[in-house]
Image (cartoon, rainbow, N blue to C red; front, side, top):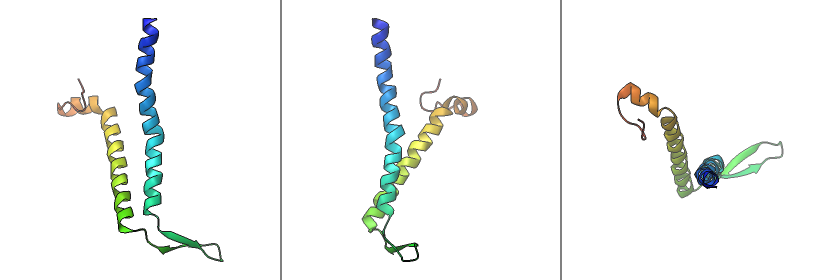
Length: 97
């Protein structure tokens, strides 16, 4: 019984991290794309043209969201390579041994 509870308590954080990173990052990316998009029109020949740029506040928020996404990706790469970076530099990255 103890092993089952231990397993469940270990699965919960992994599942939550998977939901946040697996669904949250693409959702943030989609939000940033939507915020940075202006108003568009479809012409008679089928081409789509931008009629009006997005407001400055929306473009700024989009840039902040893109920066957050880049930082999360960078943190993920550092997390994966932390042991190698520790051996290479001697600096303990993100709790490496």
